[in-house]
Length: 170
Image 1 (cartoon, rainbow, N blue to C red):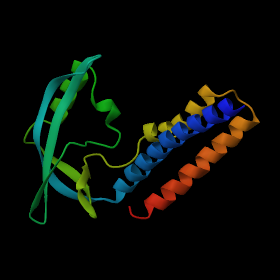
Image 2: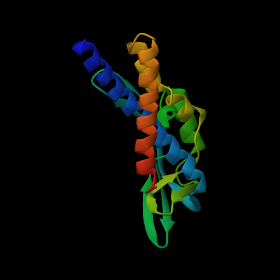
Image 3: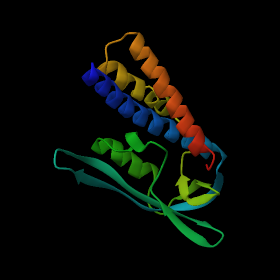
Image 4: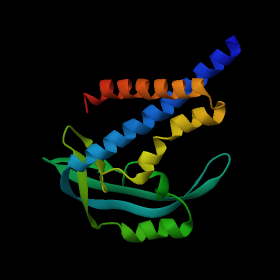
């Protein structure tokens, strides 16, 4: 009994963490629709190979600059949740063609924290999909019963409370 409760709590903590991170990213992505536009310029855009100890892949080595009230900033973020920006050689070549060096781009920056900037503001369907990741982790690792449903409700409520506490400063 004690082992099962400990396992449930550990799984719930993992699920809360995943859900919290996903929801936080979704809120920031949605808030970026309200950010201010400014002109920017692509500084670097090229294909690179990135390897890890287990694998490797092509990445878009990318950077753009923008100026706000005489202060120069540099960013690499194209959009929130850069999951789809790396991949096949053809995909990365398409990104290099879309964002060639020295091209002018529209940058959207957070007026409260100008170092936060994106080229494509807003949330995508993927952000909403990732909200399901925490509860799915819990469902996969636990048998479905009334206890599981109660844990998912608890996970959701804790995540919402944590986000409401953190969202006040954003």
